[in-house]
Length: 121
Image 1 (tube, rainbow, N blue to C red):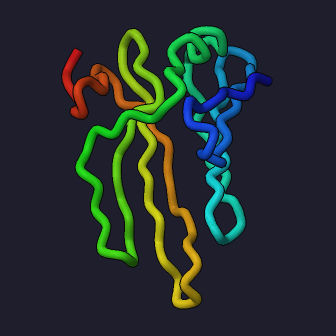
Image 2: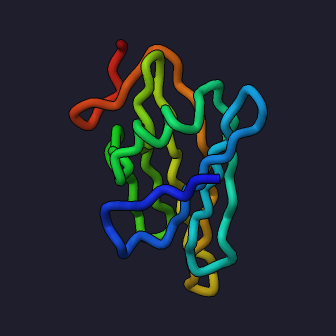
């Protein structure tokens, strides 16, 4: 298992990579006010390639939507040879005032995050 480091030490989220046979499991623990959400994505890339592709930050590829109760944005975590891994960020303010996460990881073939956009490769 390999835990990746963020360039910003204030980011509490954790990303770990673990070999699972022919695949690598990306596990992300998103820390908000309400219990951490843990999301997973299995990809057909070796752990070493993913670790090399990690830039220490998530690159936004959409404008952030934020009305005070809902925050939503798409960010790229890894640009790889034939596609990218995106993180769909969704934070919801609960009636108590605390925030919860409802995020997702996804593989996007034939696209990369570049200059704040998703572009065809």
